[in-house]
Length: 182
Image (cartoon, rainbow, N blue to C red):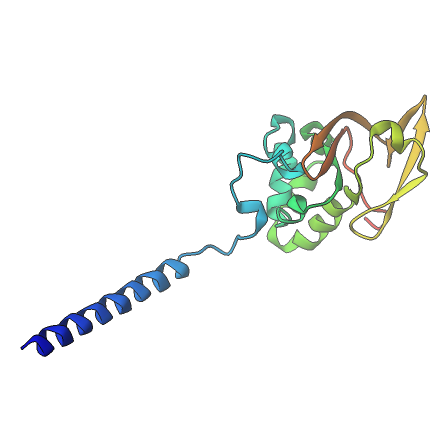
């Protein structure tokens, strides 16, 4: 009788393990396709360049574009990354319908190319940028730097502010940079 009790206890435990495995498998099936470093919540570290853009009311169009191009994980890389972040006003200055057209799923690659043209490796201050003639961007093209009245102009854009980030620096600019091929 003791043997029968032990056997039933053993089989009962085995079934619970199977049920737990099925529940775990069901939980993993619920995972969304948007995964990666950008989607991990972290309240303890210095904000990434992406966190800074997300937290800025002046960069909602930029954030929408980054999300449409699915580049969030790129902007949370260890870096250092230097991001030239156009303001909402800079996007609004583009020809009418341009932003809406770029945000369409079928234009994701073009949008990603434009956004990558705003990112370069490094963590250079505004003052240090005056030493450069051009920067190699993440889309493998160069953006020109011109110094006017001691201020660096990045592809014709003025740097309005510079914000240090945990993985680089965000330079807020007043113009959307368009790659030469666009």
